Length: 394
Ligand SMILES: Cc1ncc(COP(=O)(O)O)c(C=O)c1O
Image 1: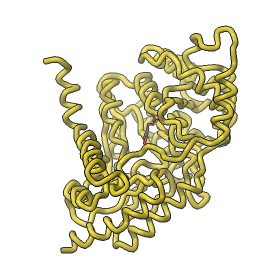
Image 2 (image 1 turned 180 degrees about the vertical axis):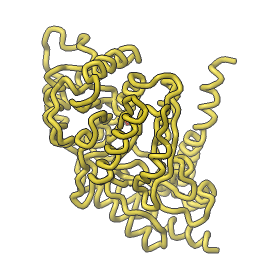
Image 3 (image 1 turned 90 degrees about the vertical axis):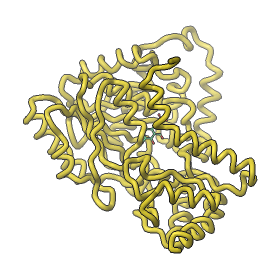
Image 4 (image 1 turned 135 degrees about the horizontal axis):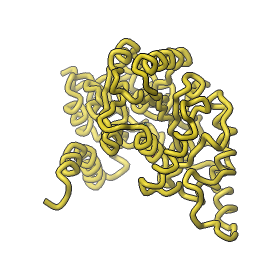
């Protein structure tokens, strides 16, 4: 045995991702990349905005003593203060640098949050469909994921959520705009969540947190606004990144924002600073911190994503697919024309279209499409979707 049994089983469980990737690579080699329509990956294809390149060049040229050295584990205070100003507007509460910690992306942020708050065996409730990596993050910190169904249109089902929260629950984890459904939770839904969590915290005599994973916040369509989460509940924490809104997924830069009114807020902040350090991140990448601190408000061209969404939605609608039109993020989560979503994804593959089965997000009978690809890939995929639908209709 060369590696831990648990990791071997995780590798086995997540091997379908690798298999899909390998299958896609094989198909591209065989048919030519331009003839394979890969809608399986959430890797943003739009370039970062010009403000990013300008700030990067300026910051890269700075020569100052200690500039590439260690820093406080939560990150540069002046960068956190800049982010606090912008996040105060998004979150509809007054934030300062004392509530912001810089992290290695949203994934780093979530791991820091979970390590800081979870006691062994405590549970985190999440609404389906959900980002499958949550299972691994929970396991990293001795927690357990409890999943609950959503409504028909992927909204929050409050009855299910209330039922799922027990004395062992430490947090509710939401993701809006959602990967894979594209749904944005409304102000009213967040308020209701706040009420439920307040009541449950009282009932069980412990702090039950609301964690909001929101790397897609800026990617919203038809002028939709993503309401502030920190405004809705005092024990709430935002985990987010610049991976999607600035197309910087490879640079690993994000942050945590804590509600200023959270119970024992300073202890929570200091605990997170320690966890950022002992998880081995130590601090988020320094150069990237300085760059994003300078370009608050900049984003990739959201209109370009909106156009891609429209091409895909129009094409799939015409081909007879049933789906909830996304309000944000860059995914579509249609119903599979046959009950077996894994089988349907294979049928799509025969048409050289690559998608991900909904089972991977806890909702079989659906499939996920990423539209963060060239417009031509989406346009050229539509005939494959039509052919796959025809095959299913027999
Ligand atoms: C819902 C969700 N949360 C978190 C992440 C991780 O983001 P990051 O690359 O910033 O760590 C992703 C990435 O795709 C995501 O879709």
